[in-house]
Length: 266
Image (cartoon, rainbow, N blue to C red):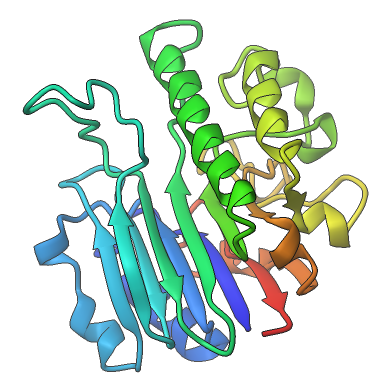
């Protein structure tokens, strides 16, 4: 089973590039971020006509996540548990950043797709929100481990885990993506028993999933690795490969991210 995570940076703005990629790459499951569309305006028929089941958690103009699956999707939930203000009527996490579903195939697989807050400027309220969001993610990750689920947490984490995951780590030292508190929060999740799929398959530096549109970052390969797959132990046992589809960044009207893939023996 081939699964891709892809921050598309606007599904309507890049519908041609996205459908061309779907046609060529044929992912069994695609986990999308930054769809920047409310659910009712997401072009679901385009993907349903290609044989995909579609589930979205959208927001007008910002954020938004989606699941496209050739296999049935069940038990869909939208929004990360533990939203700020939960329990008070009318108060919830209004940012559409998280979706979960069970993919029903030979073996059930729980897919957790996320678009983690950026957190800049840091320090500040946006950074505080990022860290609180990661605490909630750790709670959900803990529950998946305790339930011994075959599960994946994937998407745009907006976290540079290590210095080797940035072409120029020094310029990111005070950025919310690389501050010590951010990386420590990421490690606390991984240390629950998760496998960083890419690092299980590939060592060393020079491997990036994002290049800024500014200052010729792509031409200079001035990138960072912020799109990740975290696998529960039951899922890690099925991992056969993980790779970054770097050449997507050089195509016409690209996203600033590229797809990252896992292949599971399912």
